[in-house]
Length: 263
Image (cartoon, rainbow, N blue to C red; front, side, top):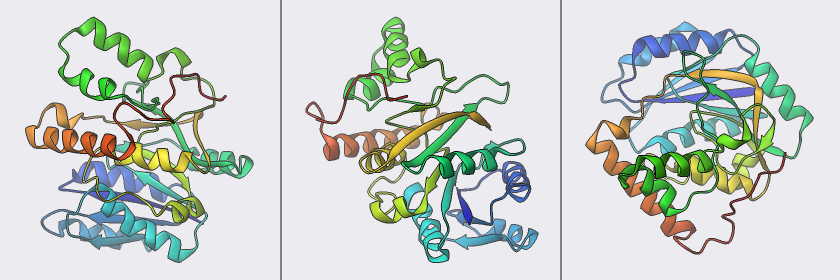
């Protein structure tokens, strides 16, 4: 059994309709809409299919919202659970390809497909474990050449993004996760209201299973980079980065390695 979830906050109806269409044309058995909006206007989508469950929730953050669905998924005894952003969509057989990959690679706890912009360009969302310079420098150091060189290494541009590989940090926009692994780690750390929660989750999964990139399956993502445009989101971003390094270490981090991942 496969479950999936999206956390919404005044999400575009157009995006959600497109995502639901992808879900209903896939092998996903149950789809949870966790709505953190100030009203329940999206409740009507529950009537679209018996495979959709709508849950209106207080806005306690991205990770907290997904934990509501993760707990439901575990109660259902599903094999896999998928974390999906509302601005994601895909063509046929993506879920089936990822399911087959996970069935054939039992040591893998999390897999992410290739993520593409709507125009087909690759989004560089495979990342190494970050240093403070990686996360703060890319935003606040005004030297473009330095930023580009640092980002190219941190985002693993050198890998080519065309081969299956183990990656320390994968994007929360689309995570295909083994449910028993989620049970063992306890889902998202709810101290992260928004941003860095996927980095933290991926890191904790990586302590007990492999976290893999599988480019033979791909999805499209209308990446907004909201914190680059909105001061409130920027504050959330900075606070989450600080919480991440307070938890894992600012300058002394034994597990942070700048090395080529296992392929």
